Amino acid sequence: MRVIQFREALREAMSEEMRRDKNVFLMGEEVAEYNGAYKVSQGMLDEFGADRVYDTPIAELGFAGLGVGAGMNGLRPIIEFMTFNFSLVAIDQIINSAAKMLAMSGGAYNVPIVFRGPTGNAGQLGATHSSNFENWFANTPGLKVVVPSNPYDAKGLLKASIRDNDPVIFMESELMYSDKGEVPEGEYLLPIGVADIKRKGKDVTIVSFGKMMKVALESAEELAKDGIEAEVIDLRTVRPIDYATVVESVKKTNRCVVIEEANPIAAISSEIAYHLQRNAFDYLDAPVIRVNSMDIPLSYAPTYIDATIPNVARTLEAVKQVMYKK
Image (cartoon, rainbow, N blue to C red; front, side, top):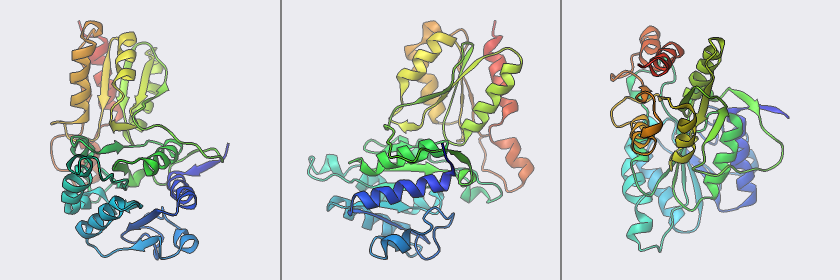
């Protein structure tokens, strides 16, 4: 099977859907003439023209609102934020318009729109460009929130998101755009709301999503050297969450560690831990442990970044705590 970059998988997903459906279009900052801030949309202006690949001003509230209106009127917009940190400027349109329109219109108006772009830490960009908003948007009824971890998942999930009749928040990572992975030539879609077991194991369940899956899988490799077989689950989507896959895994392993880049308060990892104590309490041999970023704004200094976000060492320590809990 061919190997392509994460950015190429996203580009293929958008291009295939735009060829398939003339109502799909791409709009955002630098997506056209500059070929995308991270070259995700490279060549799309040449293929589809300025009528379907739009550069916008630095006005997220404005072009997000244009996208919502277009979705209400039968089009299928893909709205790219250069970073989801900038989505805060547009959050009124996302939360109060896109997410609530179907309910407030009594079912008269769907908003089939995808808001996509990078989320979380991307190196030395400072605190205002390094936030994680997955749990923010997952808290909102009416939205679906997708966070892929590799090129194969990214393509299949983005195609499914573009075809979905509900608004989808599709969150990537600047640190993953150059990642390579196997992606088949033919068309495929992956269902929203279905987790994937990336590694089978019997001793402990490690749950994560997005780029933190790298930490999860590397941690599992290290644990295997000590004879601990970790089952690693990639949630893929954090609204809806595939609780059933996590619960069934914990019923087998009796232990769970959740890795998430977001700060710990009201996080996705909190929700997973709560759901397990409600639905798998009798199977747990130790409390669920979460590995989150420290509860501080992310620093610019690389040494502080390394100390703040989840890493393999902290994950191994968490696994040891749940494995050897007396």
